[in-house]
Image (cartoon, rainbow, N blue to C red; front, side):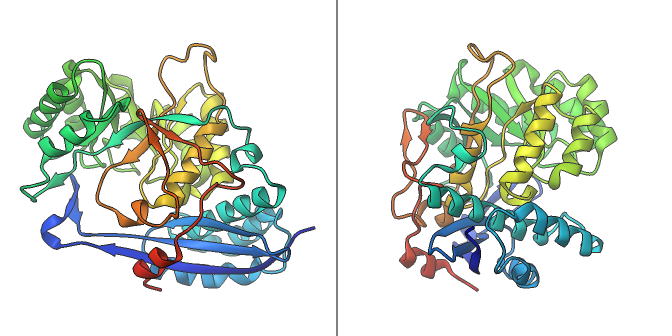
Length: 378
């Protein structure tokens, strides 16, 4: 039985000029952070996984749990995770402990799949497709005169994406103007999604939804703070636009509350945040049992993007397998982020508005060691 010989953590950060900062309703920033966990088995097989968030914090959680994995079977993640959760329950789950576990989980899937010479998606449900339609995640708030909404929309419109998601959430007047501009550039046929990043109260979110509904909005993402579950349920019952959320929720327990409370229409687990592929699959099963759509949130580096591809490829189609009402889409971040664009020897392939599942075993990707050292901070 293959066992875990060693684990290592790599903290990464990409910093760009402050005047190029971009962001969302709550503010902006000029740095992107993340972390990678590499696992090597006693058979010399390696696997890689991504952790979301501040790498210096994640590193300390990683150091705390690393000894519990060394020497254990590569198949024992759920048993080890349960021991960690049961013994460290007072630490909670909405933190970098869950991010560290997520990276370890994905790295194990990568290593196991490579050991068998198969793809990660084969391990988690089978690969239903190798071409996944993408929507552009763009339209950020920015003070950079060379990177305004018009520039970002033109870039998105220049590709055959299924649609585009833009940031709103700085007042109803601003929301309507940004949505109007986006619909004009994208045309009537592209999907238009909006993201509030939890900046509104239920009454303002409902006013926003009603104001922008005439522009044909596919979904409104995170209209409320993540803890306002009752507000989500009340808003969903009255909103003319479907509600999506999940990027700021952690583990299946958070998502059970969202799903059982009928708080949202689209379930958005973020794999490097929610706890890894095992946890994302648990969440997907709950969502599918409740007849809700699943659309993973993707915001991070190249490894997380590749992981989301495998997750989407393994999701069974529903409710109608032959003619699904909407495509199962990948969020394709178009922001300035070297951790997404420069870490791989062979970048992920974007073709005719689709991102192609990488060929080869495991996640099908190889890190560029030179780029890793360039952005390594711990």
